[in-house]
Structures are given as C-alpha cells and as structure tokens.
Image (cartoon, rainbow, N blue to C red):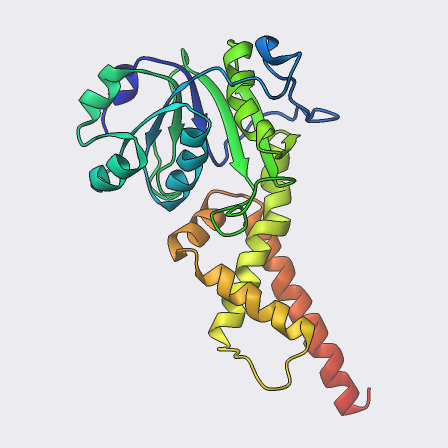
Length: 268
C-alpha cells in the first residue's frame, strides 16, 4: 500500500485487533454519550464518515450496523467488493488514491491479521478496538457483547466518544483496558478456545445417538472454530506474545493428565 497513510484525510484511525501499549485501565469502561445526546439516548447519533481498509466478512458485519445507524461508509480492499457495496449503500474504491482523496472522520483498518504491516503516522489518533463477537454471535443483537478498546493516542476526545457510542448504542458492554492486558487475556481465552476447537477438529469428533449436553458443547465449539480461517488462528499466535505461553501450558496440562491416568493403570 506504500505511503497511502500519508495522503489520507482523516481525524482518527482505528486498528481492530491489538497493539502494545502501557497499562491504563478504566475502572468502569462506560462511555458517556456525546454532549448533544446527553439528555436522551434516543437522539440521533452524529453522522460520521467512516472508511474501511479491507472489507472482508468481519468488516461487512460491522458496516451493516453503521449503515443502519445512518453513518456514511466508504471502503477499499484488495478484492473487488464493488457489487456488494453497491447493494449495501457503500461507496467502494478499487484505487487507494481515490479512497484517500474522499477523506474520512474515522478509518478502520480491517485487513487480515497476517497482512497488516503499516507504521501508523504520529499525527493520527489511534484507538485500538476488538469486538469480542462476530457475525454469528452478534447476528441477532450486540446487546451485552463486549467491545474492548484502548485509547492509545487520542487528541480528539469528542470524535472518539462519538465513534465508541456506535457500540454503546447497540448495547455493547464497553471494556476499556490496555493492549497489553487485552493480549494476556485473549491468550487465555480466545487463543485457547481456537486451539481446543482445532484439536477437536483434528480428532474428527462427530455427533452420535447418545450425545450428552457437554459433548454437544464440544461439537459446537469445533464447528464455530472451523468457521474461522487458519490465517486468523495463525495471526492470534504470531501477534500475541502470550499465546506461546498458553500453548506450552496446554501441552504441559495434557501430559500431566495423561501421566496420572497411566499411573492408575500401572498401579502407582
């Protein structure tokens, strides 16, 4: 993508996964509505110009809600999504230069987790966000689903608050934490969940006529995990320094359990 970041007209930039940052944790993680909305949560949101760089399934999922709320959305991607965007009411640009010239209030970087390698310019505000849900778990509602965010470098607090209010208005549970803590917790939960799901897939477990509820849960975990790409799983490992630690702990735990079982057979 070259030096496109130096050409784009933008006020705040968001990265939807992770960056490293010193720990700063909000005790509540609750977002106040923009001043114009303070008297009524039913008031319309300020209209934002939101640009997506990368428009795969997850970006499409987010864009649907942003369009529903009345925001103006543009997108660019390596793949051609012009027909889909036309159906959704989104302006799609094949050329990065044209996308940059339009300008955005907020730019969402949503490439695959393995392909992002841009240095973020110092003059950009940076808000790291991670919706802890996807198209399947959030298809009916975002009510109560966690949106984790870190204000890595924010100067325009009003615009930042207006953007976060998109998720607050949909009922998300707003969780402010540092990227460092996010990565640690994600290693314990998200990466471990994906790992167990892929192990179950390798075992080729299948439904039987006598499934217990717990086994049905394992089948659901396998299916939901395998709906995600292997690139995503690799990215969770490659870009999270805590993932290797969790993988080692899982391997050690398996060996410990196996040893205890074999000891019962051997009469030790």
